[in-house]
View (cartoon, one colour):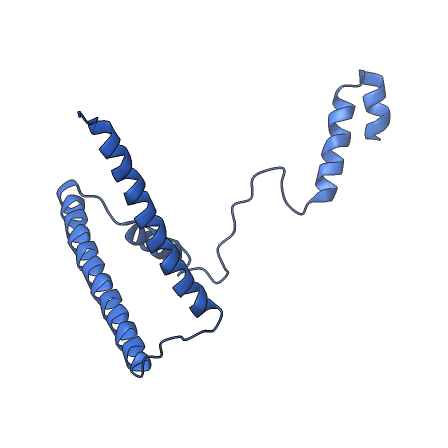
Length: 150
């Protein structure tokens, strides 16, 4: 009698599936029992283990920060080398120089430095009204301009 090899592989697959499902169901019932408050295993050293775990996490975090601080210091050294090579100043240095120049200009003055206000902007609302009237008068014919100027 000749047996088909696919028949055995089919039975093997069924058996493996059955065993896998059985193992999963056993694990699920064990976990469900714990969830429902059943016989949960209590570890007397749980607090100590938790403290050790937290300490290890804190130590890893410190090591990670130190590693990145070292990497950033190396990068800054490279950046500074490039700045020195090409004569580029740091942004903070440029801002400090600009602030020092502004203060140097106002050292001899008794008043604070004037702000740069573009023409047409500012608090002079009356001047704007007069300038509008002057503008309108400019476009009037000659005799009417004389009447309005008086």
